Image 1 (cartoon, rainbow, N blue to C red):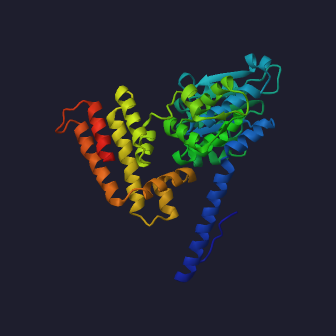
Image 2: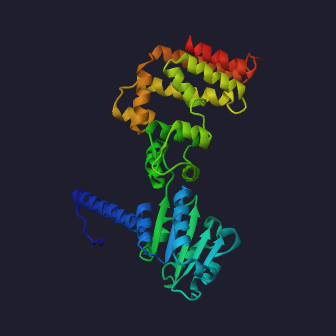
Image 3: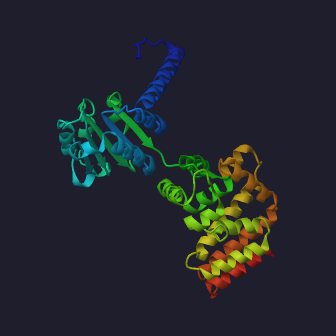
Length: 365
């Protein structure tokens, strides 16, 4: 692919040529991105088939997949009995690029390759020297650079893509987490319903490493092919399926007063674990989303923008919105604003527990 020298005559010809140049530029950068970045599935597939690259640059804001790849190489690149002399683990704060390169260039002892893994490589000095090394890496080494919470510029990596595996681990979007949970439990021969996956997503959040560890612990407690139910989550992961702010908002939205007051009673007994500021803020966000949807044209785009792209969450929240009029939602949001101020001490000296009871009573009456 190349750019041709063209003699431009007239505005029309200039416009045509500029359009062609822009098209070539877009294709060039698309091809560059395609060449220098691989997906997690592509990387793992090659590793499973023992196709090890000379250099791995693992970067990005999601540490889970970086750890997955580096741990797999650490555990599978060579037999355990050969690791003492040929597998080196370094940390960015404690080493430098020259030492990493020196380790990689040492001749392996009793095996075909050495493995050099650099953790916390964001702290590594002179990272550009490693990039230079990757232009002509040692054929007897596998070097793994774990560059978490940062990204090396594409322009720096472009020249070395033929020798290296480039993997960018992007932080997962909130709305994708329930579907990820449903898929990921299959790794441990478990099943899970969408509602329970949403419960885990809401309570643990986008912490894939913690989520994965919880599933690993369940393999000790549950037989294969078990279904992870809400009761199992409550008992073994330590999340209450009834007594969290999400269950409170659902009970209020469904007008289940007995359940709402039961949850409030629990909150009052554990006010330090469930502070009012957290409860009020969560309820405010919830009701503001319902109001935004009711005031919109209710299109597919609006559903995704307000409630996220998860079909299950969309369906539940659209139902809640339809169960409330605009005037009712405006009234509830006004109450929440009032009690947010009171919680901050504005014209109020009630204990936190009494304030919460009063707030929920006003929302429900």
